[in-house]
Length: 332
Image (tube, rainbow, N blue to C red; front, top):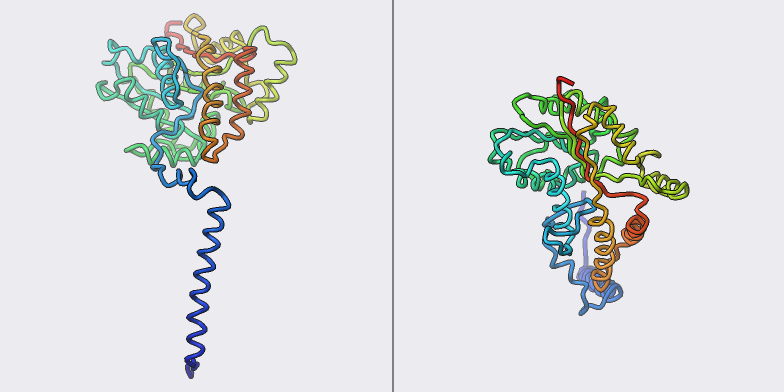
């Protein structure tokens, strides 16, 4: 097959065309940059971000320090919420640090919660510590795996709300927590149980009846004094957030559900911490939106969420609560 011949003029035209293409592309890039933001403004913040991000916490947060001063940063408030939950369960007590502990964590987020839990309960100083985390979110699982040294026990796609859907490997990992070598066994649900469909009952029953595990949770409790329209409003809100229609229960209904699932009514504690949650989070969202605005970043949907939490703070139609339930003794 004969090769095509090129004249000197053809070569020159091609050379010039190539350079013109490069120049045009550079011009387009420069035009795009100057159109989107002032080249000497703040748009270069993207170049200064260090990845992976130092934290990816996600819960409503406990926005008050032990000395009564307000917390300013989201990651600190979120970790503080975990610490308050563990304190309520008695797991941060140094007197109990010699006990073996097993934890089933449903909805563990992006790994920060797992690392902090191990630190706060002094896992390294305990005779035995076993942790199994469940998540339905594949992206959060991937992020968590990058943050943790060891692979998580549960593969992506497992629905903690439906134990009957777990495969054999998942069941084996979870049921391994029932080992009597662990003096304390806990189910932990930090700001996630109201999403469980069809309800919290399946995971409560699994924890109580199969694992003999106590439960500690941060959850949202429906006010006993909520009006009919307020109840309808929160039901619709929950539906929009893909929660079951009747996911929000009154304190009495919540206790009854725990008792029905095998927990001791006399050992169910529900503590209202709304004063430390809704207002702090709503205020943080306002401040964060204002702080990020000069950089061209908008919290968009979170702004509306902040208004909802302001409404919760004002009306207390929903209460932020720490819940601790303990199983009935074998003699009962």
